[in-house]
Length: 146
Length: 306
Image (cartoon, rainbow over all chains, first blue to last red; front, top):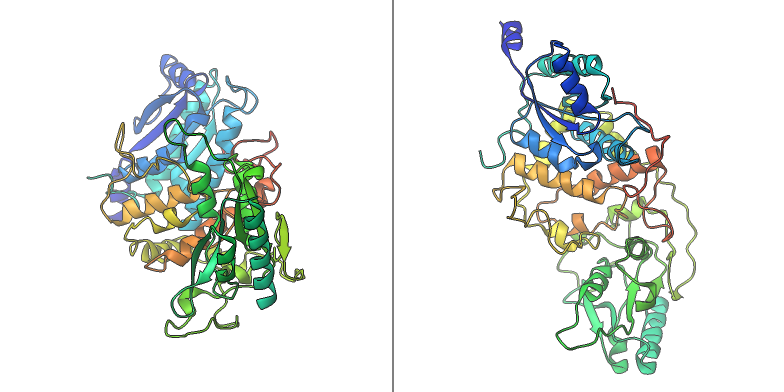
């Protein structure tokens, strides 16, 4: 019964994709007709460095089960260093979530380039499965005036 | 202790007599054992400055206020320095504020006081008339892990140099790390659900100096609801911790003012620990250092990234 509940659970995943690499990568996955779970809702940002830790926490507060942030590979950032800044900030956020016991597995950072449609599909599939295993996110959800 | 007090008074009096400073921010005797903040503007008032085990507050908060004061219409900005009495931990705050270009070195004259530890005001009996001696029972938590007993930046240092004997191994934070994630969440849930969001931690924090705080902002987007519920409280504390990551100097003011005794220092110390471990960043040591989130390194660790 419990297993059924887990399998029926469709996680809500929010994706922050950078305009120059990952969003184009996602586009490529689409035009290449690759299959990946439709659980992800994508928000395009100009750079992964634009993603404020607040965005991620707010998403959890508003009921997201998982948050994926994706940007250009290190060294490939359109703005030279944006993804390095993202890496510093979000690694610490990941650590902090772990410290507070808010399943860090619900938050993932990945590097997907514009030519990696396959990798994008793989990342989304793997992440969706990971979040599905964790079940609905209840620790921070229910905020934001809901 | 009194020796330091005399030096503080003499220095303040000297500066006020020569007009080098506008005023001196220090401690004066409060009701009963506690101290309160004193703004000394006349040399003859310098005698009221005290130094004892209850001088806990981080006075650099008032330095930030002075730096952020704008002149009125048609007035010139008065850049005469102000004097300030700081403990070594508070001197780290000044270093951090200089790093962030909030405080200009020439606008502040610092009376640094060497320190062997102060009392935790929450552990001192309120009916006591005299400041108690610092003992193992009443010492403030921050002093137990303090690695700087001598001011890092000062124009005048009062008191004898104190030898450094403590190495901070972050064992108080590591204790939590030994629990399972579920236990850790239950621990923090118990702490954070008590929060009444008085924002005292923000108001007392000398590094929370944003003129418009994200939690006060209504337009264009209200980030956090005002209601005191666990999701909002968690959001508040996590975001505040992230805003202080790599900047917090562990002066302990947030925890001191907290009316419901949330161990806020633990969150900040955890990030301080990680910042040191991952990026070799230590806040409040050198004003020439770069800020943690203002810089990056191609060799930064990326162990959780796909």
